[in-house]
Length: 73
Image 1 (cartoon, rainbow, N blue to C red):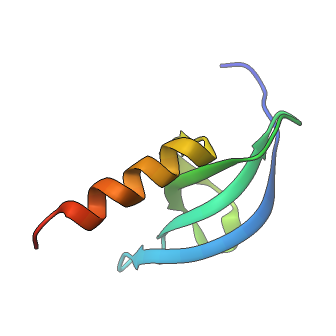
Image 2 (tube, helix red, strand yellow):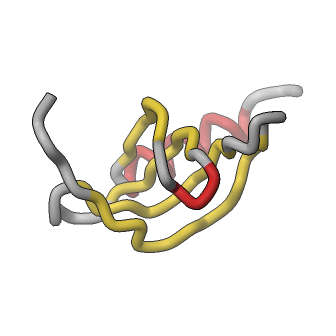
């Protein structure tokens, strides 16, 4: 696996926390020095490790927001 870098530009919110201390978060992250994207993924305490996640452009996040508003819970 190739090396990569990331910079946590803005912490937005914690969506959930597991018993082992990992948190599922929504953040704004720059990967490999590129334009920041919205990112949903699991993080170990202190952001020491990360799980697999999903990155979204702003327009994708806005579309997801609209779709979630239409869902009935």
